Length: 193
View 1 (cartoon, rainbow, N blue to C red):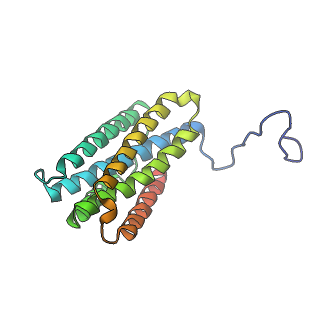
View 2: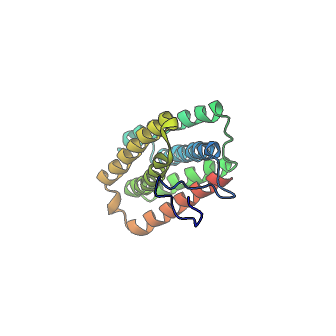
View 3: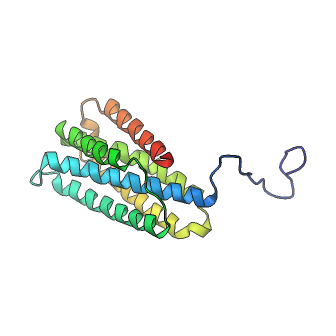
């Protein structure tokens, strides 16, 4: 940077850390903490849906498949928490209850509402994982690869929800907007607490 705070024309502008900005290590810890919390919440959503719909429901195999992938994601981030000595969010007990309640409530509204829940959550997670992936440098290639793999699976879940008639849910736009707002709030809180 030149003395007048203009970028130096001889090289790219480098963003300087500001007071309160996370260090790269803190940023990675935040990514892992919030991703583990999100996958935990997703697991609980599907558990709530399965508890209401039951194992014999025509959509239970579809939900079970998504649940199994979320469980794998959760186990991966659980391992990262341990390996990198990252503390989990203190809000996990809240996500335990809220995730199950969201899954159960949408399943009580019907199978299409359960699928609308999946669409809403997965669209938020897609945005979230895309931002994380873009922020990761080559020194975090394995984490970036994991996030991209999981992001692809989350998009598969969204597409499944759409194919299963999510948009046919009465009040679809209102339901999805509310779930997205709640999901974004959960991400924001889990990054900080």
